Image (cartoon, rainbow, N blue to C red; front, side):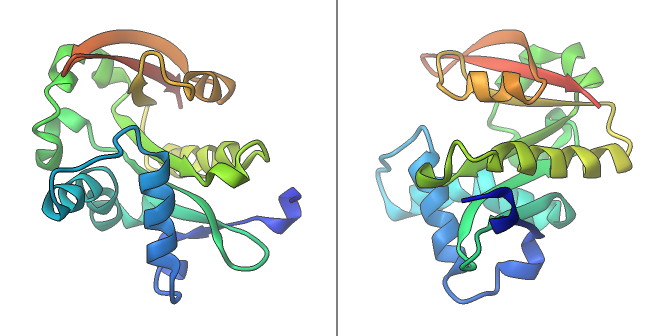
Length: 181
């Protein structure tokens, strides 16, 4: 796979393609830190919180990396709204702990790349796409939240994010990484 084999396409341009939604869902759940759910309803709520809400509320900040055969290789969804002001994220109480940090870095994103497509720079291209759009919208800074011990911390650091704060949440430690825009 070469960079020329990959297209970054707006979500709305590709998601109606037959099978695309199911393929993106597969990537979403495969890459998620959470793998088990008590019910189908709980699984659907999880998807809505971390993917569906962003696509519906910020459709111009959502895109899919598509391979040469038209298959999704990854996606990114983002928001320029401070998560403390986003009602859909109300249950995520760790944002309140971050306080002033979110004043400077209100934008945030969620990104997942198919396991077989990692290591080809797709994630970095997706972040560059989102950063360009967030800058155009006037966002001063961007943050991501991940597990403090997650393997993706180095990925974010390679994308110019800096560790900024660690917060406890549900028997875990979360790391907030920030990036100036």
